[in-house]
Amino acid sequence: MRYYNRIFLIVIDSLGIGQMEDSESFGDVGVNTLGHISEARQTFEIPNLTRLGLANLVSLRQIAPINEPAGYFLKLNERSRGKDTMTGHWEMMGLYTDKPFKTFTENGFPKELIAELEKATGRKVIGNKSASGTAILEELGEREINNGELIVYTSADSVLQICGNEETMGLDTLYRYCEIARKLTMKEEWKVGRVIARPYTGLKKGEFVRTSNRHDYALKPTGRTVLNALKDSGFDVISVGKISDIFDMEGITEKNKSESSVHGMQQTIEIAERDFNGLCFVNLVDFDALWGHRRNPLGYGDELERFDQKLGELIDVLKEDDLLMITADHGNDPTYTGTDHTREKVPLLIYSQSMRGGHRLEEQDTFAVTGATIAENFGVEMPDGTIGKSILREFVI
Image 1 (cartoon, rainbow, N blue to C red):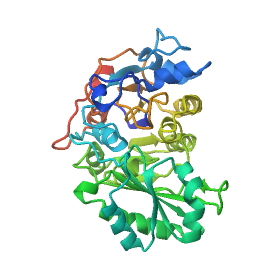
Image 2: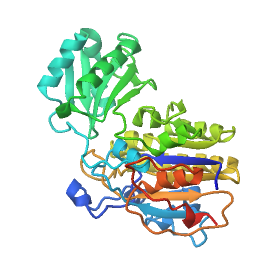
Image 3: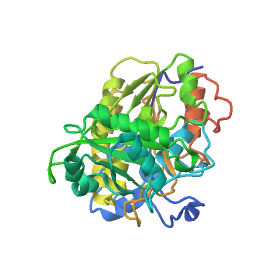
Image 4: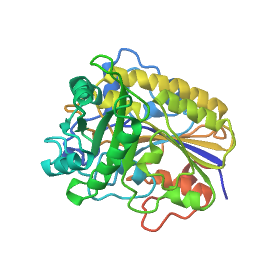
């Protein structure tokens, strides 16, 4: 029996709600992305998230828990050994990752990899360090344009990023260089989760602007996921934001690129206003990329307030047989040291117009309950080798 005709799964990228038992082994002590955002602000207005029970999961200075939540809510722990985007999303859809993806944050990429990339592209590599994308453009953008060099950099994530000016290098050339880098980084000792094309416009310092033509070249998932099971059973699997990149289009039937998190929510609202049968899977990356990594708790909080407004608009267009699930893929405490993700528990908020209130559910030991719940709702079998158990019967009356 199918309980919901459509499910909307929204990932607020990096919205952690407190450290896990093993967080210290990842270098994260006392981390709490949402809690520390609240502590840093004078005001915090997220009425729709509050109505769904978010303040009942984590202590917020400005917002008290509510007595009559509109839906169900619980905390999820990550079972996989990692705290990155791909590990978190893949676990949601049933994949356990026992070995974290390689990062090159401390010293940049090995000279052997850089030499291979220079040989294959015919350009001298500059940068080769962990940096903010906007900062490295200000530092090296003019040099790249004037000398025909290639800006390569990384971050706290398992990524190799390449900048390219859309006017002087061209998108096709940038994408070709990234395809070359993706092939090179399939070597085990260089294997990163994603190679990312970072196009920009402008010809001099102070005028550089990154564009929305970013493209991620991700590793394929290590096995079949709930998304594959849904697609193979004839259901729609609509991605918004970077979901299609994270899963390398595996199990995706339609992709929608987003220019921002607000735009991603607007796309989701428009998708909700048309007919489909299956899952709409949304990633809102600005929380992580613009505010978490840049250690800006005020900006992060402002982004949450903008999201909350759009969330209200989405709830208004949902149907009685729709299900809304809101979660996160890891933490990124904007008050913590460094610029890395933080290993944290994440929320899972569950809501439908058909619900008549809700309450807190038991904490779970894996993000994979999300995918397992979606699979049970649509009557599809979890693929072999996946993890997670459904909690559908905990909130379906």
